[in-house]
Image (cartoon, rainbow, N blue to C red; front, side, top):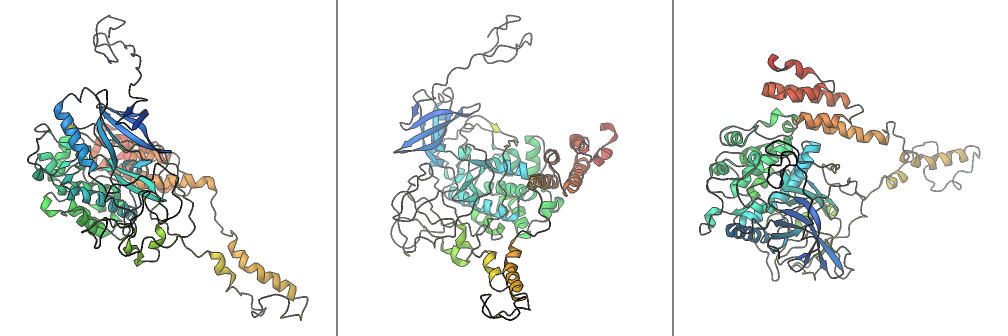
Length: 603
């Protein structure tokens, strides 16, 4: 491209002239030849969802009889597909992911090569938000919520590890939270794009990664990832420990600025104690012990499997969940659901509703290995109410050997209060299959509100109205033996009528809203912002806390300002002048104590 000012040639796509610095004209955007085309003989590309340096992600659909399934189609640019090593790695890793059938693992429908040369992979399209977004917007999570999310994550990893597959890039951005079968925080583990089989079981494979490179995200990488030694499932256990630490405290267990600084921290430093952060100090001791063990420098000292990590960690909040249904299903013989995108025939052996997170071996009896009902869920009466609906796959159901296929019909469904969730693509990271991937932690975020649930609400079947109507009988002047007003006491006509209506009105009065302090609806949002600011500040995220404080109002505003001030002071004490931006942010909301603690040379 020629510069219009100095007429010197420049490379295509440059924004500024390399000679004179003038702004170069933008070349017209050419129409994407893939839009409207059909790849793999069944997936129609209808638009672009995103773009990266290695390829694009498209919005696609697959006709399924009278319905259409929405899919995400990720492509690798044709110039990269000319390298036979890249093609070999792409095909191998897509095949690796397609072997995984756990319901908490991203589903891969197909992969191959388009007519124009791009390598593609078609996978399920999800709506929701990443765990990274949830942490950035709300800070640390409750221990119960952590338990539920990690339970599902460990279930996905356990299956992968048993197949000799190491994820190698576990981080909040690769844990996707969606909603399924009426349940919040349904987990999908993403980004198996840089996953590979355990080197010990893949010695015969040609090593496609360049010598001396590492794959992963430095804040979450295990010590052995930095040294280039052979990886196994215990590397993922370390990353899982970092991830869980961040979920419980709102911050990372180490602090660094460059990949090499992260390497030093992971290989030599001890993680910050949980007690250094208010939210961490409140975490259950059982959880803290499990995380600290997972963060051991020597992999022999960590838990040896995802199953063992979860058994060390759990406080029981995830047990009643087991594995959530992949989609609502119907009773045998009833009408099929109308949702064509959620109900697809599962592959043989795919986990169904109620199957335990970890399966020790195949069940007894004949027929396919498939469990429909979680018998452990009947240990508590409330556990049966967690499942919104007993359901079966769209294809003919396979009864279990016990004959018990579905739980009892649940109570009337509740309305969900979940706020609108960002529609996001849950895609396998195929874009990182060549070259060096040395990523630092990103800060992607969404603009929608996180669904607030520290525990899955159990529907209670006893409304308060029925309790109030029977045993009231508080006025002692009127005999309690008469169910009807007129017959028993005709004496005292002046007194009987007033007593009767007062008796009948007494049970109904408590059911009316007589609570003295019902906050106006408009203040609820402001108070939520205050609580979010407090959580973020307690987790050391001063700048994000200040942003949430802008919408904070109500009785917790002073507490939020104090928490931000304390967070800024902690940052100054540990980082000195490097924390000046945090001190300035706090000062803008009237919390300027940290500014006075800055070293004199940087004030």
